[in-house]
Length: 378
Image (tube, rainbow, N blue to C red):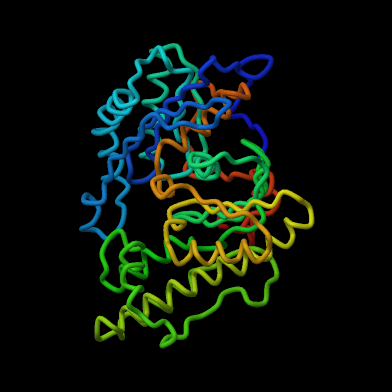
Protein backbone atom coordinates (compact mmCIF):
# COMPACT_ATOMS: atom_id res chain seq x y z
CA UNK A 1 0.00 0.00 0.00
CA UNK A 2 1.42 3.38 -0.93
CA UNK A 3 0.43 6.82 0.24
CA UNK A 4 -2.87 7.72 -1.42
CA UNK A 5 -5.23 10.67 -1.60
CA UNK A 6 -6.17 10.27 2.07
CA UNK A 7 -2.73 11.50 3.13
CA UNK A 8 -0.57 14.49 2.40
CA UNK A 9 2.90 15.54 3.47
CA UNK A 10 2.63 17.82 6.47
CA UNK A 11 6.10 19.21 5.85
CA UNK A 12 8.90 18.87 3.35
CA UNK A 13 10.26 16.06 5.52
CA UNK A 14 9.35 13.89 8.46
CA UNK A 15 7.80 15.37 11.57
CA UNK A 16 10.47 15.87 14.23
CA UNK A 17 9.93 14.13 17.53
CA UNK A 18 10.00 16.07 20.76
CA UNK A 19 12.82 15.08 23.08
CA UNK A 20 10.44 12.63 24.78
CA UNK A 21 8.88 11.39 21.54
CA UNK A 22 5.64 11.90 19.61
CA UNK A 23 2.46 11.66 21.67
CA UNK A 24 -0.76 10.83 19.84
CA UNK A 25 -4.37 10.35 20.88
CA UNK A 26 -6.00 7.41 19.10
CA UNK A 27 -9.75 6.84 18.60
CA UNK A 28 -11.36 3.56 17.52
CA UNK A 29 -15.09 3.10 16.73
CA UNK A 30 -15.16 0.73 13.76
CA UNK A 31 -17.37 -1.95 15.31
CA UNK A 32 -18.72 -2.42 18.84
CA UNK A 33 -15.92 -1.01 21.00
CA UNK A 34 -15.64 2.69 21.77
CA UNK A 35 -11.96 3.15 22.53
CA UNK A 36 -9.45 5.91 23.14
CA UNK A 37 -5.75 5.68 23.92
CA UNK A 38 -2.68 7.85 24.28
CA UNK A 39 0.57 6.40 22.93
CA UNK A 40 4.05 7.90 22.96
CA UNK A 41 6.46 6.86 20.21
CA UNK A 42 10.13 7.46 21.02
CA UNK A 43 13.51 6.05 20.13
CA UNK A 44 12.90 3.41 22.82
CA UNK A 45 9.72 2.19 21.11
CA UNK A 46 6.01 2.58 21.77
CA UNK A 47 4.69 3.34 25.27
CA UNK A 48 0.97 3.06 25.97
CA UNK A 49 0.14 5.84 28.42
CA UNK A 50 -3.55 4.93 28.58
CA UNK A 51 -6.00 2.59 26.87
CA UNK A 52 -9.71 2.83 27.60
CA UNK A 53 -12.30 0.55 25.96
CA UNK A 54 -16.05 0.60 26.40
CA UNK A 55 -17.46 -2.71 25.16
CA UNK A 56 -20.99 -3.04 23.81
CA UNK A 57 -21.25 -6.80 24.32
CA UNK A 58 -24.26 -6.51 26.61
CA UNK A 59 -26.03 -4.22 24.12
CA UNK A 60 -25.78 -6.77 21.30
CA UNK A 61 -25.97 -10.08 23.17
CA UNK A 62 -29.73 -10.39 22.76
CA UNK A 63 -29.35 -10.21 18.97
CA UNK A 64 -26.48 -12.70 18.68
CA UNK A 65 -24.31 -10.20 16.83
CA UNK A 66 -23.54 -6.54 16.30
CA UNK A 67 -26.48 -4.34 15.26
CA UNK A 68 -24.96 -1.38 13.35
CA UNK A 69 -27.53 1.22 14.42
CA UNK A 70 -27.23 0.27 18.10
CA UNK A 71 -23.45 0.37 17.83
CA UNK A 72 -23.41 3.83 16.24
CA UNK A 73 -25.74 5.29 18.87
CA UNK A 74 -23.62 3.87 21.68
CA UNK A 75 -20.47 5.38 20.15
CA UNK A 76 -22.16 8.80 20.10
CA UNK A 77 -23.05 8.46 23.78
CA UNK A 78 -19.67 7.16 24.94
CA UNK A 79 -16.94 8.73 22.79
CA UNK A 80 -16.51 11.94 24.78
CA UNK A 81 -16.37 10.27 28.19
CA UNK A 82 -14.01 7.53 26.98
CA UNK A 83 -11.66 10.11 25.46
CA UNK A 84 -11.64 12.28 28.57
CA UNK A 85 -10.85 9.24 30.68
CA UNK A 86 -7.97 8.24 28.37
CA UNK A 87 -6.47 11.72 28.63
CA UNK A 88 -6.90 11.70 32.41
CA UNK A 89 -5.30 8.28 32.85
CA UNK A 90 -2.39 9.38 30.67
CA UNK A 91 -1.90 12.33 33.01
CA UNK A 92 -1.74 14.77 30.09
CA UNK A 93 -3.57 17.80 28.86
CA UNK A 94 -4.22 18.55 25.20
CA UNK A 95 -1.10 20.71 24.89
CA UNK A 96 1.03 17.59 25.34
CA UNK A 97 -0.36 15.96 22.18
CA UNK A 98 1.35 16.03 18.80
CA UNK A 99 -1.61 14.71 16.83
CA UNK A 100 -5.01 12.99 16.79
CA UNK A 101 -5.45 9.66 15.02
CA UNK A 102 -8.85 8.15 14.30
CA UNK A 103 -10.03 5.04 12.51
CA UNK A 104 -11.45 6.09 9.13
CA UNK A 105 -12.34 2.58 7.95
CA UNK A 106 -12.94 -0.16 7.16
CA UNK A 107 -15.83 -1.01 9.43
CA UNK A 108 -19.48 -0.23 10.17
CA UNK A 109 -19.55 3.18 8.57
CA UNK A 110 -22.00 4.69 11.08
CA UNK A 111 -19.61 3.90 13.90
CA UNK A 112 -16.53 4.92 11.94
CA UNK A 113 -18.09 8.33 11.31
CA UNK A 114 -18.53 8.93 15.05
CA UNK A 115 -14.88 8.46 15.98
CA UNK A 116 -13.57 10.21 12.88
CA UNK A 117 -15.86 13.20 13.41
CA UNK A 118 -14.81 13.48 17.05
CA UNK A 119 -11.18 13.28 15.98
CA UNK A 120 -11.69 16.03 13.41
CA UNK A 121 -13.34 18.27 16.01
CA UNK A 122 -10.54 17.68 18.52
CA UNK A 123 -7.86 18.36 15.91
CA UNK A 124 -9.53 21.56 14.76
CA UNK A 125 -10.20 22.84 18.26
CA UNK A 126 -6.67 22.17 19.48
CA UNK A 127 -4.78 23.04 16.31
CA UNK A 128 -3.40 19.51 15.96
CA UNK A 129 -2.74 17.43 12.84
CA UNK A 130 -5.32 14.75 12.02
CA UNK A 131 -4.26 11.29 10.94
CA UNK A 132 -6.96 9.07 9.43
CA UNK A 133 -5.92 5.47 10.12
CA UNK A 134 -6.85 2.27 8.34
CA UNK A 135 -8.17 -0.05 11.05
CA UNK A 136 -6.29 -2.97 9.48
CA UNK A 137 -3.05 -1.02 9.56
CA UNK A 138 -3.65 -0.58 13.28
CA UNK A 139 -3.80 -4.37 13.66
CA UNK A 140 -0.72 -4.70 11.46
CA UNK A 141 1.40 -2.61 13.86
CA UNK A 142 -0.25 -3.82 17.07
CA UNK A 143 2.53 -6.30 17.86
CA UNK A 144 4.86 -3.30 18.17
CA UNK A 145 2.91 -2.29 21.28
CA UNK A 146 4.37 -5.19 23.24
CA UNK A 147 7.87 -5.61 21.86
CA UNK A 148 10.54 -3.86 19.85
CA UNK A 149 9.71 -5.03 16.33
CA UNK A 150 11.58 -4.18 13.16
CA UNK A 151 10.25 -4.18 9.62
CA UNK A 152 9.81 -6.13 7.42
CA UNK A 153 7.72 -9.06 8.63
CA UNK A 154 5.15 -11.56 7.42
CA UNK A 155 1.73 -10.87 8.92
CA UNK A 156 -1.35 -13.01 9.37
CA UNK A 157 -4.20 -10.64 10.16
CA UNK A 158 -7.07 -12.75 11.41
CA UNK A 159 -10.15 -11.21 13.01
CA UNK A 160 -13.94 -11.17 12.96
CA UNK A 161 -14.15 -9.37 9.64
CA UNK A 162 -10.76 -9.95 8.01
CA UNK A 163 -8.38 -12.77 7.18
CA UNK A 164 -5.26 -11.81 5.22
CA UNK A 165 -1.61 -12.66 4.76
CA UNK A 166 0.55 -9.60 4.15
CA UNK A 167 4.17 -8.65 3.65
CA UNK A 168 4.66 -5.60 5.88
CA UNK A 169 7.68 -3.53 4.87
CA UNK A 170 6.71 -0.50 6.92
CA UNK A 171 3.85 1.83 7.75
CA UNK A 172 1.89 2.45 4.55
CA UNK A 173 3.92 -0.14 2.63
CA UNK A 174 2.22 -3.54 2.62
CA UNK A 175 1.51 -6.19 -0.02
CA UNK A 176 -1.33 -8.69 0.09
CA UNK A 177 -0.24 -12.30 -0.34
CA UNK A 178 -3.60 -13.92 0.37
CA UNK A 179 -7.07 -13.10 1.63
CA UNK A 180 -10.40 -14.73 2.33
CA UNK A 181 -12.63 -15.07 -0.71
CA UNK A 182 -15.78 -15.17 1.45
CA UNK A 183 -16.03 -15.26 5.26
CA UNK A 184 -13.31 -14.44 7.77
CA UNK A 185 -12.17 -16.96 10.37
CA UNK A 186 -13.59 -14.88 13.21
CA UNK A 187 -16.97 -14.68 11.50
CA UNK A 188 -16.98 -18.45 11.09
CA UNK A 189 -16.26 -18.86 14.81
CA UNK A 190 -19.07 -16.48 15.76
CA UNK A 191 -21.71 -17.82 13.35
CA UNK A 192 -21.02 -21.46 14.21
CA UNK A 193 -21.12 -20.62 17.92
CA UNK A 194 -24.48 -18.92 17.38
CA UNK A 195 -25.83 -22.03 15.62
CA UNK A 196 -24.69 -24.07 18.63
CA UNK A 197 -26.52 -21.72 21.00
CA UNK A 198 -23.37 -20.43 22.66
CA UNK A 199 -24.36 -16.78 22.69
CA UNK A 200 -22.36 -13.69 21.82
CA UNK A 201 -19.44 -13.20 21.44
CA UNK A 202 -19.19 -16.69 20.06
CA UNK A 203 -15.48 -17.14 19.48
CA UNK A 204 -14.34 -17.20 23.12
CA UNK A 205 -17.35 -19.35 24.10
CA UNK A 206 -16.55 -21.90 21.39
CA UNK A 207 -12.90 -22.02 22.45
CA UNK A 208 -13.88 -22.67 26.07
CA UNK A 209 -16.27 -25.47 25.06
CA UNK A 210 -13.71 -27.05 22.72
CA UNK A 211 -11.31 -27.62 25.64
CA UNK A 212 -13.38 -30.64 26.74
CA UNK A 213 -14.10 -31.95 23.24
CA UNK A 214 -12.76 -34.59 20.85
CA UNK A 215 -12.95 -33.22 17.34
CA UNK A 216 -12.07 -36.53 15.69
CA UNK A 217 -15.74 -37.52 15.88
CA UNK A 218 -16.70 -35.06 13.15
CA UNK A 219 -15.48 -34.76 9.57
CA UNK A 220 -15.65 -31.20 8.32
CA UNK A 221 -14.88 -29.92 4.79
CA UNK A 222 -11.49 -28.55 3.76
CA UNK A 223 -11.69 -25.57 1.42
CA UNK A 224 -9.87 -24.74 -1.83
CA UNK A 225 -7.90 -28.00 -1.92
CA UNK A 226 -7.17 -27.64 -5.63
CA UNK A 227 -5.60 -24.20 -5.31
CA UNK A 228 -1.96 -23.48 -4.54
CA UNK A 229 -2.31 -19.82 -3.57
CA UNK A 230 -2.58 -18.29 -0.11
CA UNK A 231 -6.30 -17.44 -0.15
CA UNK A 232 -8.75 -18.64 2.49
CA UNK A 233 -12.39 -19.75 2.51
CA UNK A 234 -14.54 -20.46 5.54
CA UNK A 235 -18.12 -20.31 4.19
CA UNK A 236 -18.33 -24.05 3.49
CA UNK A 237 -17.10 -24.87 6.96
CA UNK A 238 -19.57 -22.43 8.48
CA UNK A 239 -22.51 -24.04 6.64
CA UNK A 240 -21.47 -27.63 7.37
CA UNK A 241 -20.80 -27.01 11.05
CA UNK A 242 -24.04 -25.08 11.50
CA UNK A 243 -25.96 -28.05 10.09
CA UNK A 244 -24.12 -30.51 12.31
CA UNK A 245 -24.94 -28.32 15.30
CA UNK A 246 -28.61 -29.15 14.79
CA UNK A 247 -27.82 -32.85 15.32
CA UNK A 248 -25.96 -32.38 18.62
CA UNK A 249 -28.02 -33.84 21.46
CA UNK A 250 -25.64 -33.63 24.41
CA UNK A 251 -23.16 -31.16 25.82
CA UNK A 252 -20.38 -33.58 24.86
CA UNK A 253 -21.61 -33.59 21.27
CA UNK A 254 -21.35 -29.84 21.18
CA UNK A 255 -17.91 -29.87 22.80
CA UNK A 256 -16.67 -32.38 20.20
CA UNK A 257 -18.02 -30.25 17.36
CA UNK A 258 -16.46 -27.11 18.84
CA UNK A 259 -13.09 -28.85 18.99
CA UNK A 260 -13.45 -30.04 15.38
CA UNK A 261 -14.28 -26.52 14.18
CA UNK A 262 -11.36 -24.98 16.04
CA UNK A 263 -8.90 -27.53 14.67
CA UNK A 264 -10.12 -27.15 11.06
CA UNK A 265 -9.81 -23.36 11.22
CA UNK A 266 -6.34 -23.65 12.76
CA UNK A 267 -5.31 -26.13 10.05
CA UNK A 268 -6.45 -23.91 7.19
CA UNK A 269 -4.71 -20.88 8.67
CA UNK A 270 -1.53 -22.93 9.07
CA UNK A 271 -1.67 -24.41 5.56
CA UNK A 272 -1.97 -21.02 3.85
CA UNK A 273 0.56 -19.43 6.16
CA UNK A 274 3.07 -22.18 5.43
CA UNK A 275 2.81 -21.44 1.70
CA UNK A 276 3.39 -17.75 2.38
CA UNK A 277 6.35 -18.53 4.66
CA UNK A 278 8.09 -20.56 1.95
CA UNK A 279 7.74 -17.74 -0.58
CA UNK A 280 8.67 -15.07 1.95
CA UNK A 281 11.79 -16.94 3.11
CA UNK A 282 13.18 -16.99 -0.43
CA UNK A 283 13.24 -13.18 -0.53
CA UNK A 284 14.08 -12.25 3.08
CA UNK A 285 16.88 -13.17 5.45
CA UNK A 286 15.06 -11.51 8.36
CA UNK A 287 12.32 -14.01 9.17
CA UNK A 288 9.70 -12.65 11.54
CA UNK A 289 6.12 -13.90 11.57
CA UNK A 290 3.45 -11.78 13.28
CA UNK A 291 -0.14 -12.82 13.93
CA UNK A 292 -2.60 -10.08 14.90
CA UNK A 293 -6.35 -9.55 15.23
CA UNK A 294 -8.98 -10.90 17.59
CA UNK A 295 -8.59 -14.55 16.53
CA UNK A 296 -4.92 -14.33 17.55
CA UNK A 297 -6.21 -14.57 21.12
CA UNK A 298 -7.33 -18.16 20.49
CA UNK A 299 -4.77 -20.34 22.29
CA UNK A 300 -5.07 -23.34 19.98
CA UNK A 301 -4.56 -21.23 16.89
CA UNK A 302 -1.69 -19.32 18.46
CA UNK A 303 0.04 -22.55 19.50
CA UNK A 304 -0.41 -24.05 16.01
CA UNK A 305 1.11 -20.97 14.39
CA UNK A 306 3.96 -20.82 16.89
CA UNK A 307 4.88 -24.40 16.02
CA UNK A 308 4.68 -23.58 12.31
CA UNK A 309 6.96 -20.57 12.70
CA UNK A 310 9.54 -22.64 14.58
CA UNK A 311 9.41 -25.33 11.88
CA UNK A 312 10.33 -22.83 9.17
CA UNK A 313 12.85 -20.79 11.15
CA UNK A 314 10.67 -17.74 11.77
CA UNK A 315 10.63 -15.79 14.99
CA UNK A 316 7.04 -15.60 16.26
CA UNK A 317 5.36 -12.51 17.65
CA UNK A 318 1.79 -11.68 18.63
CA UNK A 319 0.41 -8.59 20.38
CA UNK A 320 -0.31 -8.78 24.10
CA UNK A 321 -3.81 -10.19 24.61
CA UNK A 322 -5.15 -6.72 25.46
CA UNK A 323 -4.23 -5.50 21.97
CA UNK A 324 -5.41 -8.49 19.91
CA UNK A 325 -9.03 -7.35 19.81
CA UNK A 326 -10.10 -3.88 18.68
CA UNK A 327 -8.43 -1.12 20.68
CA UNK A 328 -7.31 2.47 20.23
CA UNK A 329 -3.66 1.98 21.22
CA UNK A 330 -2.94 0.35 17.85
CA UNK A 331 -4.66 3.29 16.10
CA UNK A 332 -2.59 5.78 18.08
CA UNK A 333 0.61 3.92 17.22
CA UNK A 334 -0.20 3.75 13.52
CA UNK A 335 -1.01 7.46 13.66
CA UNK A 336 2.25 8.25 15.42
CA UNK A 337 4.26 6.30 12.84
CA UNK A 338 2.50 8.15 10.03
CA UNK A 339 2.96 11.49 11.73
CA UNK A 340 6.66 10.76 12.15
CA UNK A 341 6.87 10.37 8.37
CA UNK A 342 4.99 13.63 7.88
CA UNK A 343 1.79 11.92 6.67
CA UNK A 344 -1.36 13.71 7.81
CA UNK A 345 -4.95 13.87 6.55
CA UNK A 346 -7.11 16.69 5.28
CA UNK A 347 -9.97 17.65 7.54
CA UNK A 348 -12.51 16.55 4.92
CA UNK A 349 -11.21 12.96 4.79
CA UNK A 350 -14.20 10.60 4.50
CA UNK A 351 -15.16 7.52 6.48
CA UNK A 352 -14.78 4.36 4.40
CA UNK A 353 -16.74 1.12 4.94
CA UNK A 354 -14.13 -0.67 2.78
CA UNK A 355 -10.45 0.16 2.66
CA UNK A 356 -7.96 -2.48 1.52
CA UNK A 357 -4.45 -2.29 2.89
CA UNK A 358 -2.94 -3.11 -0.49
CA UNK A 359 -5.07 -0.92 -2.74
CA UNK A 360 -2.96 -1.65 -5.82
CA UNK A 361 -3.48 -5.41 -5.51
CA UNK A 362 -7.15 -4.93 -4.67
CA UNK A 363 -7.56 -2.88 -7.85
CA UNK A 364 -5.72 -5.15 -10.30
CA UNK A 365 -6.68 -8.45 -8.67
CA UNK A 366 -9.98 -8.02 -6.82
CA UNK A 367 -11.19 -10.92 -4.71
CA UNK A 368 -14.70 -10.63 -6.15
CA UNK A 369 -14.37 -10.22 -9.90
CA UNK A 370 -17.21 -8.72 -11.92
CA UNK A 371 -18.75 -11.10 -14.43
CA UNK A 372 -21.70 -11.14 -16.82
CA UNK A 373 -23.21 -8.34 -18.82
CA UNK A 374 -22.40 -4.72 -18.27
CA UNK A 375 -24.91 -1.96 -17.98
CA UNK A 376 -27.86 -0.96 -15.85
CA UNK A 377 -29.25 -4.47 -15.59
CA UNK A 378 -25.97 -6.04 -14.50
